[in-house]
Amino acid sequence: MSKLDDARKKGVNTLTALAIIAIAVYVGFTPLYEKIGGGVAGAVVGASFGAIFVIILTMYLLNKQTEIEQESKRGEKVFEQKMNIYWKVFDDTQSMLKDGHISKEDEMQKLPFVMMKLIAIGDDEVIKAYQKVYKAMTAVFEGSKEDKVKIENASSEIIISLLSNFANECRVDLGVSSEKVKDDIFDAATSVISQSGEIMSGNNPPIKDPDNPVAESEKVTVEGKNYTIDRHKKGHIRIYKDGMGEPLKGSKGILKKIDKKYKLALTETDWLQTQRAGKAVINKLKEQKS
Image 1 (cartoon, helix red, strand yellow):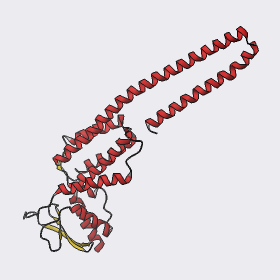
Image 2 (cartoon, rainbow, N blue to C red; image 1 turned 45 degrees about the vertical axis):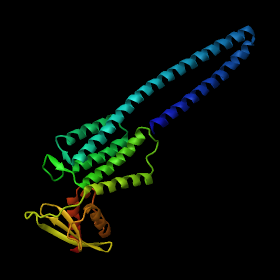
Image 3 (cartoon, one colour; image 1 turned 120 degrees about the vertical axis):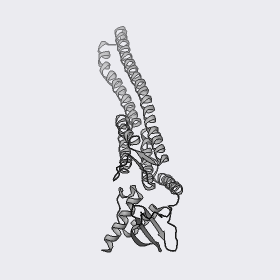
Image 4 (cartoon, one colour; image 1 turned 90 degrees about the vertical axis):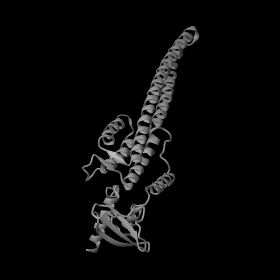
């Protein structure tokens, strides 16, 4: 239940409690008033009980008003802190992706503290969403002993996609809306982000290093077009279309089409790096042939 729904429920409970008090006063005081028989005594008793009821009601309302004001002030402070933390996540991730590298001494040292801040102040769904972003960032270092690792385009796209889900959960937690962005709108937005990422990724230049020859090669046919997947000794992946001498850009997109057609079932971890995805595709294609 959201904080807005919780506040509404408390308001209904308050009104219900006041109604019950009013009914109880009416039912309980009527027999006593009738027994006295009216007159001055009855008027005095009625006025006394009326004053008592007003005092009780006034105290109740004052306490409730104080509680609401305190909750409002606390809510404002919590909201500001959440905004600062969430925005810091976006800014730091943007800087990391812009630089194109992730460092153990910089970004990786910040991640645990960001997670702890979210645990302290964030909604459960927000924490779950950021856990996936956290895992995607740490996965970039898998298989590498370097202190600073380059973020592949594939990893960058996955991180941005997961960060979009995180932003969607922040939207609900901050009370911008009681619901997340509608699926069709969200999918359209993430698609535009993905397309812009492919545009900025640029072409893959051919590899001419004599110490980095082609170690493995596989031929595939997708949508009536023939492709050759080359994996070089140092792990680089280059995809060539028949009749073209230059490697194609958007290698990851082509690998995904191959994965889908040949039902290779690559995992989310495989897609964190283009080199890793290319190697997995080649290995699974070989398995299918054997």
